[in-house]
Length: 285
Ligand code: TA6
Image (cartoon, rainbow, N blue to C red; front, side, top):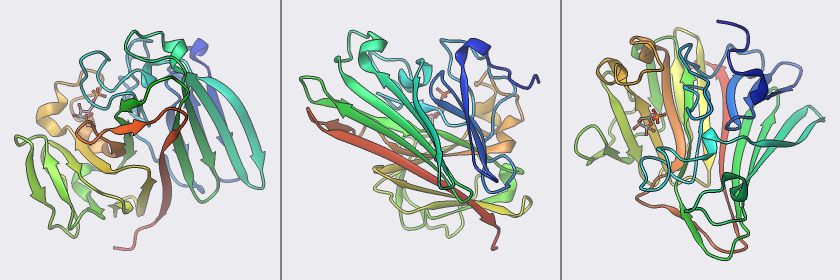
């Protein structure tokens, strides 16, 4: 794969600290790579991503907005991950490196989107964490209802090797089983089949424990009512054309989100922020 498989005219920004670095494409304000405090790569990125304007990049951290999932008027998972964002600030201060991106609904020019919805995506990086914030400010003349996700693909040694902590005691909707509601009983949750589940009313950090890599990735969030855990596994993976058949082995999606069944309303003049904070440490299990 070439060093930078995406088109040059998409533009990209790298934020760096002494031991961390993060690359963000301006197309979608899409994070495609991040290492924290000298870690190995934390995001999985498909070598078969097509890097076309009308297609989302497969892997990294896609931003899904104004809809997470299918929608009558917008493409699946929304417009933000397909849009060209502007870089409005890039600075390094006191070991915190920060890039800020903006997108206005006016630029999207969509008949079902009111004008003057202002989106800001902030990427803050230190040697300890990566913080990503998607903030929507409603400067239009009507309240706006949306769903959203930071659809992060985390790199793992093998999906069979990992355990996920922070889910026990929470109810989830099983998208692969007629939307049945299930109470998660697992201290350590394992993925061994196609998995597409929505944890309801979920606020605590989720930890991916990867003993083979000797690391755990901790995903904390705020402004999110839900968390999705997704892996297409063998059966579903063949339906996804921009990843290899066995690619499901190398990632797990943990997605801080607000899903359509309990969407967010941002009133005129108000803002809403979906934040994810990722840190990496050595495995404890
Ligand atoms: O977040 C899980 C999910 O909504 C799955 O249902 C699956 O479709 C996945 O996202 C990937 O969606 P995409 O449009 O990126 O292929």
